Image (tube, rainbow, N blue to C red; front, top):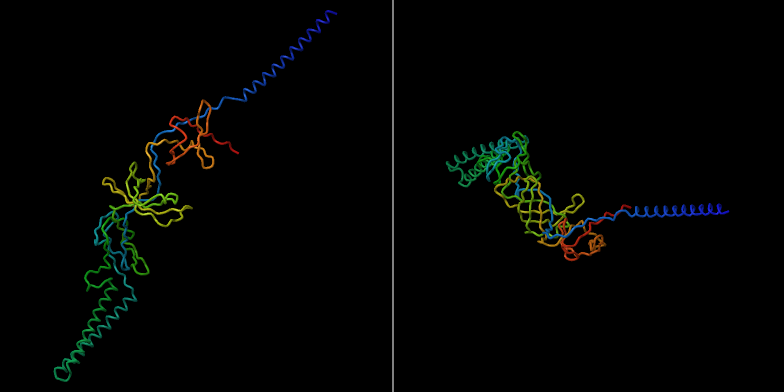
Length: 373
């Protein structure tokens, strides 16, 4: 019996040990899974505020153009007989730039020739009547008054013949020679400056400028010493700008150069361009002797709206918002962060002024991206 009791006791011990081992294994597994699920503690990147200059600007896009750009038009219809200028030439006011050859209108030419022929016949008749009146007056058969009337009629017919000849010359040549140089066929510059464009060629046809047609442009002349920036500004900024403000102009074709200017004009009415309301502005461009600025250069104009020097600022990417209230998360202890509401000032789109809420020593946590969905 004693042997059976010992054997039974050992079996109980083994069973108890097996159960204990299973319980320990189970607990160990639970601990392992828990520790694994916790992972490493998250590490957040932080930034500190900085003291810097902040300049708030309004940006306008446009181009550089001459202040005065004059189109020289043809005054008569015809064919370009000669061109005296090319783009880039300097011209003075009154300088001859082209000459037009008249191509007469056949109906007008026929009518003018008929008027000359009719006037010539009338002159011959009046002359014959005058000679007869002079003979009769010499014989005492005609009064002085009647002779005077014959002389008057003869002079009137001569004037009509002269006018008919002048009209015929106008039809043929564009002007009357009795008035000197045929100015209508000789195109002269009305202003001094640089020839920007000559859109016609010798031998090409031109149309005269009149009440119903603006006429063919012979040349475009402008003063390249007086250039302006012509651009557009968004409606969100137009109420913040004023004439007389300083403008910094950057020309795309001239690298690493900034030109100073002064805002002269702001359009009172906006135009819808690509879905946005924009207003036209003009700014005078201060000339620089060592730089050649050509008409039509694309450019951007920066207008300083507000500027502050050496203020405490943070990157706008650090800001978070609850409604309209901006705030940041500031580290108060390793791995511990506290919300701080901010009072902010001006912004340049990258940095924003901080008036209250953080100090230069604050460590601000970078916002974490929100999970999708």
